[in-house]
Amino acid sequence: MTVLHLADETEAADLAAFLSRLLHYDRGAAVRLQAAGTALAVFGRPPSFEVLAIRAVRLAKPYEKGLDVTLDVTVSVGELLDSVDETAATAAVPGAVTGPPWTGVLPPRGGWRPEPGLLGPAALHALVDASVTEFRARTRDLASEQRTRTTLDGIGRDIWSRPVGETRLPVRAVHAAQSLGFLRPAREPGEDGAGAPMLFSSGPWLRLRTPYGSIAVRTGGPGLGMLGVSVR
Image (cartoon, rainbow, N blue to C red; front, top):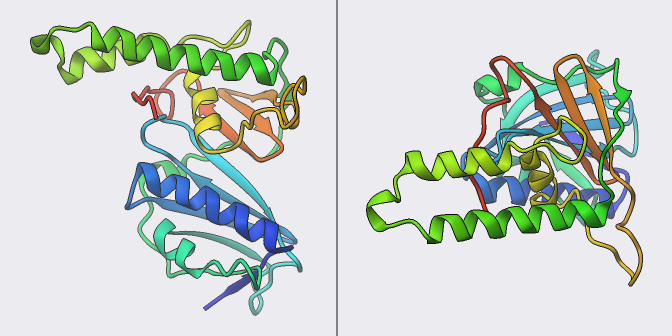
């Protein structure tokens, strides 16, 4: 079994936290792992948000297994989480699983360019909070016979597909970033978040990048542009 040596205990703890959050939304979740050199990319897809979540993990030494110098495999989130040893800063790569369709539709590696118009961290948090409040209020006001999945999905589609500020980024991408721990609140009074998020585009893809991870969404056409409903 291949063992990944992570850069330190903090990297191991952050990876474990990310995997735990993915399991919160899907107990049978899978992730696609790609490693080359001292970088490991972990791709996941929380179903409630219909986005790709990407966690970059630093490795203590370049990945290498025999003649292979790169890793590209889809594995069970639960099995990978069980293998993480935070004290030793290691993670064993479980056996490969049959990947769900999204694992074959990943964002491009390059060609990303900055996009203007993204709100600051505090405003992004406020936007998500206001959207959650609106969703709960609108669903609470429904008569019992109106509380159908179709109606709830319609309300969610209206709220979470709205653009963020002057960008094409849907609100659900920011909601996902906040829920997965990528968009963190200010640590001190008056501080506008712990690291400013940035927005990039490459073809049909948008990528919300923060110091803790990225959220990618494909706009237009088939793929990850559909909308799920979540207030968690």
